[in-house]
Length: 495
Ligand SMILES: *Cc1c(COP(=O)(O)O)cnc(C)c1O
Image (cartoon, rainbow, N blue to C red; front, side, top):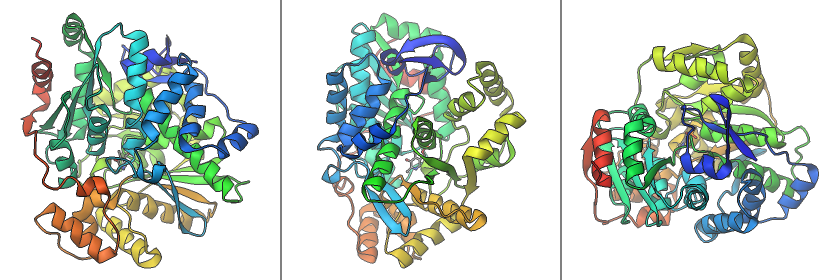
């Protein structure tokens, strides 16, 4: 199993090399050369397995140059004893055939843990094979949840350093606190004056800067990425879609006509994993892509025009406040029939004009696969309240966007197939916004707000959130998008 680049299909590297480097030299993203297929017997076997075993089974197919022992070492390290009740991705039946796939039972209470608990294992195993003893430097741009999840995953992992950049005004108070109090000897956290796209562009620029690359090389280091441009982050996300299918089968659900999947989307990583699960043989029917007011993706899916030249909004679902969705590149590569030239053309236009239009045949394929919709803050809050009042279930602001767009989809199309709605964060990561959905004013103290929400709804805050109270703030760094390079060199102590 080798990996090719979305911008040059002649590039061909091993899984270890794709994961260790994160991104291809010419700026393309790695995708598997052939997608493994799951057959009936495979699903029958998978249904009987635990989550870590399912992960080994599926990831093993993608990790061509890993031994079985290495794959098991990675999945056990990531998924045994690290999630509540050892259930990384349980389904909650909201009503009828509507299942909520709860992906926030990990150490940082967002779905990023599913990938970032395992990435350090995948990455250090990969680096051991291909990096010749060099230290791996992880740079992360985050809209809030990736940063904390990556810090938790990589803290004190030998042979790694990790630096996280988050938008100073773009994360929730709890997200900020989670990152600024991070423990570990190999970690560094920066707020940047700018939004997520600025952080992401900065990281991409530093990655591909030959001069900085050479400086690292001289110091026996190399960059890698913990963002979802790294295949090592995407592959683990495929697992939970396969796993949710198995759980529904085991529960005796009738899925002969397939099921739909609804995902609150930002960088297009999570929903892309659902697409790959579908291509591998999971009977996913429609992929319902839910945006917040930064609806560049739902506009794209509806018009075929990707246009980031628009106002950027700060919303109550901040992890989706993104106008450049990196993983869409992989999707476009796939549905253009793996056309690297077209992919380059669109990405170049995006870089130069902030805009591109896909061809009619690509648009037709998108229509077949996807439904795109959006939900603003008011409707997000109304959905949180409705879901709680009607079903006694408390969801976070991101999950609410997906529920709202799913309900719109069902009303519009009459498609009542079973659905899996990805729930991407605990409501307690966004306590103030969730509380405001009930018409209550949050306290100035974040932990008071957590208590208020708990008392009002009779739900229990996750242990990792409660444990943050009183923790020492270790980081208070601020830089601009332009000075990110200096920050990196300074932290690594190289000139
Ligand atoms: C990252 C994130 C998203 C967006 O996921 P993508 O894979 O970037 O599309 C949605 N919700 C939450 C809570 C997140 O942390």
